[in-house]
Length: 114
Length: 109
Image (cartoon, rainbow over all chains, first blue to last red; front, top):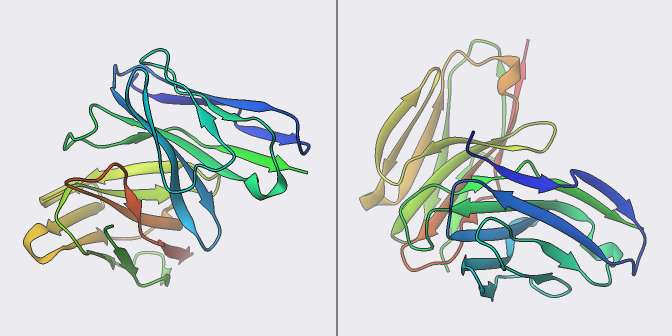
């Protein structure tokens, strides 16, 4: 089954404790992206990757890191999480950056930073 | 960047009623998608429809790209249709989907 898998689905942690949210897709997609969703602000892009070893900032990259060492994986790293990073996070992928193809979304990760 | 506006922001229906949700976008797009966000927060992909008309059961969607709008039709609504419906568009030269603010749909029994 074609899918985007995020882990964990839920996480409660404390300020400053490094964490990684994993994202994996099994569709051989080149393009992957991270979004965060906040009440009143909608979904905003954090980072995206057009292919292996190619990443770029989205609208709200501060406080986040990403890497794309393999095509299927695109982890989101919070080196020193803060309460303002409490949010619902989504990973997405599509065939290519410029393709007129749909983006497929993971089920979301709810992060609470205390 | 592209602007995406949805209307209405809130909609309350009785079970069995029909509804139309609208999405206006400000630029040419090569990707337009409709999503339903369920109570568990999952984004369910309803339609990929940068132009034309598609139908899937009780749901259908139409995008008129030249006039920069898309419509989502829900017929014979059910309580399980409740949730937030998002339209998202990607401009031809863009790097991301830009989401509208959503329509909160409540279907009462």
